[in-house]
Length: 507
Image (cartoon, rainbow, N blue to C red):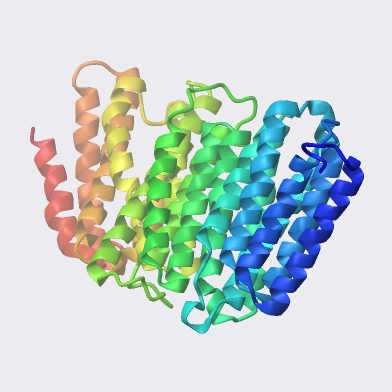
C-alpha cells in the first residue's frame, strides 16, 4: 500500500511494520517457533528500507536497529537460536556498512560512533548467552561467526570513522583489547565450565588487539618490545593452562619481535638510556629472561609445562636465556658507544661487562635460579676480546680510566668465582687460570710501558721478565698461605697459571 500505491503515510506504514515485527517476536518465543522469529526479525530489518522516504536520517535508522537488537538480545536470553543472532548481525552491520560507504562524513562522527559501540557490545554479549543457553549436547559450543566476526567488522568500520584522528585506530584497538580481556576475566571468575572455550577465545582476541595496537601507535623498536612482553605473557598463560597453541604463539611472537626491532633504522636519541633503542632492547631481554625461567625444569617451584619433554624445555630455556643475554649486551654496548665519548668508550664497555656479571649474580640469588649465573661467565670472553684488541686502541692498560676499569673486571671475576665457582665444577680451573693470565698480562703490559718511558734498550723487556718471575714466586708462596683462591685451586695455578707464565717468559 505504501511502497507501490502510496495509500498510507510513511509513518503509519513504518509503525505497522514495527508492530508486526514485535508481535511476531513475542509469539515466536511463546510458541518456541524459531522460523517465526527469523521471519519477524527479517521483516523488522527490512521495514526502514521498505518504508524509506529518502530523508537520510541515520540517527532514526540506527535507533530503530538498536531496538531490534535489544529484542534479539532479549530472545537470546531465553533461546539459543543461532540463525536469528546471525541474521541480526548481518543486517545490522551490513546496512550500517552500506550507509557508511554512501553517506558518512566526519561531521556525523558524534552521532554514529555511539551506535557502533552499542552494536558491538550487543554482539559481544549474544555469543555468551548462546553458549549458556545451548542444548546439553552443544554446551560449550561457541558461535565463531559472531565471536570473531563482530570485532573484525567493528574494527574495520571504526577505521573509517577515525581515519582523520591521530592515534584513533590505536586507541580503538586498545579499547577493544581491554573490552575482551575484561569480559574474559569476568567469565573466568564465574567458574562456568561451559564458557571455558569462550573465555580462551576472548582472551586471544584481547591479545590480538593489543598486538595490533602497538604498531599503530609506536615505532618498530617499541612495537618489538611490546610484542616480546606479550609473547612472554602468552608463554606464562600456556604454562598456567597447559595450552600448546598459546605456547607456540608466545615463542613465535618473541622471535618476530626480535626481527621487528632491527626493522627500525638507527637514530640519534636525545636522552641516554631513556630512549627506544636501549629500553626496547632491555624489554626484549626481560621478556626472554622471564620466558627462559618458565621453561627451566631445574629451577625452584617449576611449573608444569604443556606436554614438553624435559630436554626440550631445558633447550628452550637455554636458548631464551642466551637470547636475553644477547639483547642485554646489544642494547648496553650500543648505548655505551652512543652515549660515552670515544676517549672513554673502552673503559665504559669494560665497566658494563663487569656490571653485567654482578647483576647476573644478584638476579640469580634473588630469583633462586642458578642457571642465570651463566650470564656472569660472559665476562671472561668479553675481557679476553678486549685484552686482545686493547694494544691497537691504547698505549697502556691504565690509559683513559683503564686504571679503574681493568681492576673492576678482575675484581668482578674473583667475586664471581668466590661466590659461584661450585656451580661450574668443569670450568672452575679454566676460569681461575684465565683471570690469572689476564691480571699478569695487564701488569706486564703496564710495566713495559712505564719502563719504556724511562729507559731504552732491553730494559722494558727485562722489567716484564722480572715482574713475571716475581708474580710466579708470589703465587707459589700464596699456595701455602692464602686459602682462596690459590690453595683451593693449587693444581690449576701451578700447572696452567705459573707454568704458562714461565713458558711465556722464555719466548
